[in-house]
Length: 123
Image (cartoon, rainbow, N blue to C red; front, side, top):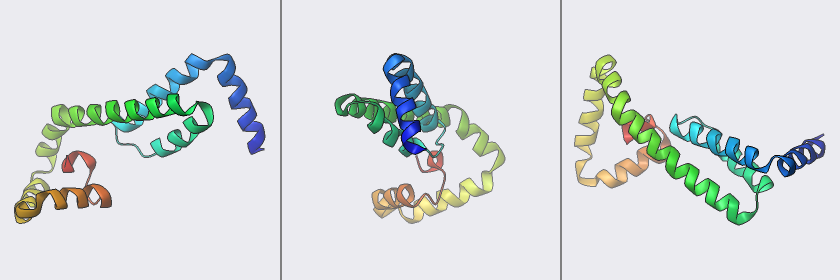
């Protein structure tokens, strides 16, 4: 069954190349913008669909655009919402950051790797 799906996707991509690429681009950026897990599966799928140079360009550009959108979205909208509904937790996080002020880079890397807090808060 998996080989059949691969053949169907491959044939569809050959007949609708730019539509598939546009849908891939939009989906990847959407997942990155809203920090929804699953972009790794799209990266694997693009390895099947596109040549290496196209794949590399798509993944790098989609990741950069999506991460930038995520940062801008949270800084414009998310910060106000979080400050309004979770002021106690923000004070706790600020205390944690102040406690690790001398090794802030290591602390931020730890937060990003372990996902112990939402992406927007650690950014």
